[in-house]
Length: 366
Image (cartoon, rainbow, N blue to C red; front, top):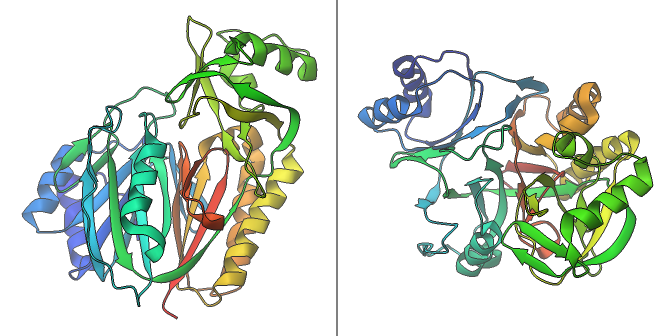
């Protein structure tokens, strides 16, 4: 369901009318003028159980929105919980017994600019294991200013994650389409999501040399984001597509700030994108999801905001292609999603935070 109203009382009433006892997942683009604390209060008055996140943009069918609210309803919920203090590693994930004869999805919205996201995902997987498909995304603002971005009945949070686990069958397709131009190099010194040294040298200096050798441009504070969006890192994985890490900023120490952790001594490649490869990768992600789960009733698209910045006007083509492929399976299927600061998926047996990647989840009953 898409809601264009920004009046908290009106929004809550519309959600209550359609919820019919189901739990609610809200995605809200950051430009929406909506009083989130007031919306929380209104939904609590109506006894609606919910979770939500603020994202750069949201997806409804094959449209991209800067304003409005996409509402998804889920039933057969096993648990919904908030985990705070992620950056300090001062958190515990509550355990809930899941029926091993049933299929579940663990859907997570997490502060995309916090630290220790990978640790949170590792702990989530340790607690719930292979009983779940894992899907979700990093919430936050394209300004890269960290502020409250995920919310539930309990409040409005930063440095936190919210996860809902509900009974459903489904499949996931994940692809990125970026190609190696240099590497491997070693992240010889890191701190959470900050790369301090590459190959025992200042991280920014090494990165600048690689970028300049390819495009002839000198990175500086003013153009860093515009150029770096085309040159992400790839974390090298054995027998699997690399996991992309997006350098989004630098600091006065010449360190590289990424979306998601890079651990000490991680082997990295420097990647580069071509429009046709990214478009094809999105199609492949949709095809992989469809092949594993025909006849879905709903779909979730989690796509990296930096893919839109790279593809610019051609991003709509990516979205149109994906939705067209999905609708061939069920033309009445509801498709929702968000453009995120990091994409979460359990594809190929790993639970990972990806960057610059498209994740497509298909859901329904067998």
